[in-house]
Length: 419
Image (cartoon, rainbow, N blue to C red; front, side, top):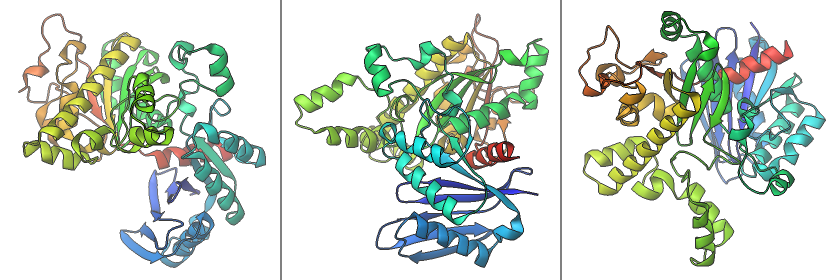
């Protein structure tokens, strides 16, 4: 079977995975870290084994050459694995790219031209593409984080600022984590519990109303109607929206002006504050949800407030998106926090019984790598008061956990485009 090498180039890292798009299996993968520093580190995993090397990695070209050496040394050999293409994750496609594209010189130039919209991400994406094209003589495909949200309704994509200024500077809602939101919402749409619900209600699948919460160190929400994204929480940049590990999410823009005028901060200071020193880290002192919940359990007041703010923002967005969709059929949690933090899932749904949302405690606490329903059902013990929506509440919706797999999504889009 043909395989695809998926590359995700960061400013000082290179993540990679060799994927069989047909079976969905990852044959190998790893990460090169601390590129450009005195000592780099590469971790290569295959066949249940891990190879770790520490050595200077001067640049992304050196990093990719090291990765290719490890494929030959530790396996699987790329030649024997039948690699037919390379799929690249690109963070920002602007208005230029609404779907994956086969990379040529014009595409590279267009991605480079978008650097002002994503100065932290697109430069590394361009470098990764250029290096990979030199070293791997197969088709290369760029898959954009913003593509799933490229056709948001104008009312959702447009900021209420001077239209001429917005047009001149490319200011609109682009959205991010689109590859994950598309992968997860597509998986939800064909899940047996969802198709059974629609059939029982005599509903067309094109009416399926989903809210997807991608909760990792970065976090975003989307509203998806019949497979099309109609809203998302991240905007011009990945800073807007939900509370995240180190990012603030929504703030009054006037805070920026206040800090510049009265706080003596520079533009770079405010950028660092909102992107790297805010969110859970800024409020609770840690950006790892596992550590935060441990501190909450130990009675730490700052951590408690951080978690409360985080959950409040989640509930607020779920309610708003239910209004955008005209109701909600499925609420889905995904990514590192969404898939593993039962306390976050329970807290996000708490009080939303009026939307038909509830979690079954036993189902929510169970751990699994499979897509699953965690809301109460006929075969679930109905032990929580929130599982019994009060009279006049909406018909029960499904609450699900669906593991995301952005690498597989990129591989499948790559193979579909290259044939």
